[in-house]
Amino acid sequence: MSASPSSCGDKAMSACCCCMPDDSDHYKYGEDALAILKAVYCRDGADVAAQVAKNMIAVATALLTCQYGPDEARRVLRIIGEAQGKAS
Image (cartoon, rainbow, N blue to C red):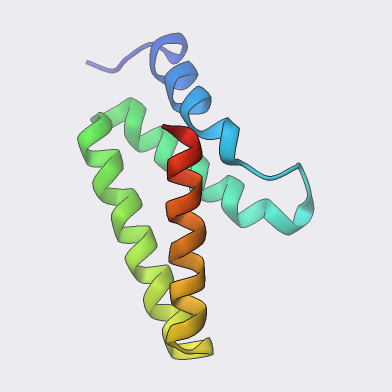
């Protein structure tokens, strides 16, 4: 049984919109990631969406560490932590 778009979509968007950057082609991949998380949230629920988000962060952190070093990965993780604090 899937949730109606008004019930899950509105919750997912209201939780994320406060931290999303302005509309721009530069942020297309972020919008794509948000669309994936929203679809997972609506189809499988909050617990699965949270796990998918954690996996996305882990993969991004590993890539940043390989490409730019651990300092850049830590900087990005700090940004994530700050955004989480603003959303609470």
